[in-house]
Each structure stands twice: as C-alpha cells, then as structure tokens.
Image (cartoon, rainbow, N blue to C red; front, side, top):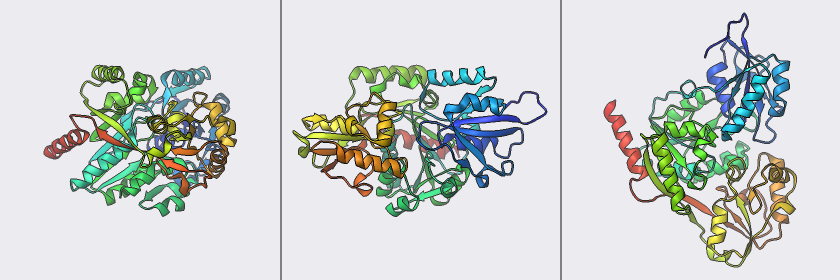
Length: 450
C-alpha cells in the first residue's frame, strides 16, 4: 500500500459492518506504524456501533482499542480526525452507492481506498475451497452443505469456516467453534448466526468463525484436512482459494456487474454456479451464461436447482400464511421473496399475509428501510431486543399458520402461538457438469501439481 509523503503516520478510517472491516484492520493495519487507524464506521447491521475494537485484538499501537462509530457521521469524522484515507470494507452494496460514498470522502479531502484481494486473502496449509456469490441470497449455504457432504463421503475430513458475524462481545468471539446446538447458546448467537451454523452442525460439520481469522485458520487446520470457506453476502474470501466457487442468481441477472464486490468474485471464479434454475425463466439463465462467458471466460459453468422441500406441504393448501424468510436475503440482498414465498404458492396457500401492520420495534424499522418487502417477514434477530420484536410480531399477525423458510428452527428460540411449517432448501445439480465433478477435477489437478 502506497503512502503520501508525510512526517507522520497516515490517519485511516475503516468503513465496515462488523466483519470484513475487522479482517482488513488485522491483516493490513494492525502493528503497522505507517498508519494510525482512528476508528471504524458501522453500517447495514443494527446496533453494532458504539463499541470498541478491544486493545487485546488491536495490537500494541492501540492500547485503548479502536472506536466504532455510525457511518451516518462519516463526513464529520473525516474532518474531526483529519483522516487521510478511508478504507471501504463491507459488501453487497451497489457500485453506484460505493461511488456516492467515495464522492463524499474525496469531497472531505481524504483518499477513498479499496484494498485488493491479494492483501487480504490468507494463505493456508490445507486445500481451500471457497464458496462465494455475486449477491446475498444466491444459494451459498446449500452449496456449502453439498460440498461438505461429497467431500466427507470421498474420505476427506472437511471443516467449514464461515465469514464473520461478530455482533456481540468481540473478546468472546475471537475464535469460535460450533459442533453442537449447545455451542450456539454458549456463544449467545444471533438468529443470523444460527441460520448459517445450525444446518451445517446438524449435518455433522464443525464450523469455525470469529474475529481474528489468522487464529481461526490455525484452529481449522488443526482439525481438518481440507477447508471450505462459506462466504458472507457477496464478499470475497479471507483465505486464498485453491478452488473458487461463485454462486449466481438468475432472478437477479445483471446484478453481478452492479454490486460490490460481487463483480470481483465473478471475475475470480473457477466454477460459476447458476442456481435456482428450477424457478427462473430460461431467458434469465441464458442472460447469465452470456455474462459469465464475457466476464469470467475461464470459469466452468454449473447449473443447479434450489430444491425446496416441505414435509407437510399439503397442510398449506387454502391457508392464510405468514411467510418468514431468511433475513439477509430479503433485506440488503434486495429480494422481495425467497423459498417460503415459492413454497406458499406451490402448495396452494390462499393468501400471503402482509406483516407490516403488526411489525414492532426493529422489525418496523426494517420495513421502513426496505420498502420492497410487503408479503414476507425477514427473520431478523440481531440481539435479544430484536428477537423479542420478532416473536411479538409473529404472534400478533392474523394468519392461519407461519411458513418458516429461515434455515434456523425458530421454535428453538421463540414461542409461537400458531402452527409453524418449516421450508427447507437444498442444492441439487441440474444436468452436467456437476459441482462435485468440477471440484473433484480441480482437487485432483492440485494434488498432481504438488
């Protein structure tokens, strides 16, 4: 990273959302005397500002830690702290919005910085398969579970490392290991964390996450002989991949060139998986094939379904249902519907109830922030207060049943006063080549070259 001529350390502000920002600090700025990080800003996730990145993690240059502010005060912070560089460090935001922030930063006199992938991807001593996406909600999690399953059946001992979600006490989240349901309670996991960890643990996986991914990687390498990186949003991986799998959503064809850093993932892809082909139109799939061919020509293209299963789907027929969808997919992922909505229509629900009149607290705020939502309730639970808001909202809605399409079993966390039907979704190949064949071929080539 270059520096402007100066007699002092350059002052840096890191824009983030509790994850990528901490990783960029750890690998680029911690213990680097060329820079003075004056703070982080926080966005996207409720109630993550007002904390301090603790001195125990911040290194010797920050005996008081590093404060975390709201992004709403970005311009004032730049001026107050005489910031030289602002490092943009979060994901799934449109290129246009990134440049609006860049314009604000440069108007305040600071440089706007996007840190390259080579500086932030840690090298591993084990083979690494990374599963990322061009937008939130493309199907990374089902693909991760699918890859974990066929690797284990092939004799590997895979472990999964998940993109960070450190929304609580950072010192207690430095390295997290999840192997049973009790671990979620011990670590005070949010609903968003449980959505990612619970299905993998139920499959028999050990899942690692945390704050300091140098230490997370070391812990994962102790237990596994191959690492699966399960990405968050549309972020790029924290580990250098041997096989980089990127998920594409035909329902949002064209978005892969409009959102940061999803386009970076597309251009890096070894294997491009077009998911949800069972619910998308043919012209959407064809459009994605053309985009991939033009912008990631070396990538192998795999077609996949998101197979939706409802064990007691016949109970939905004729019912007035409240659909609860995966939170990130329908909030900052921008989708108006998910697997729950598809299942409701497929199994003949009489009506999808608009939850907005009953929404309280943080859920009411979410509907204000994401006005495209009108027939689905996002399963948002960033902390105890929002989990309580979710319970209150669900129980107040006038409906016959709740159709729950979040990967987590909400009835383990909240009490619901009406019938709950779970919707599950899994990865399924759609013709040839299969994801297993493409990944296995690349792993074999890797083994032959070493």
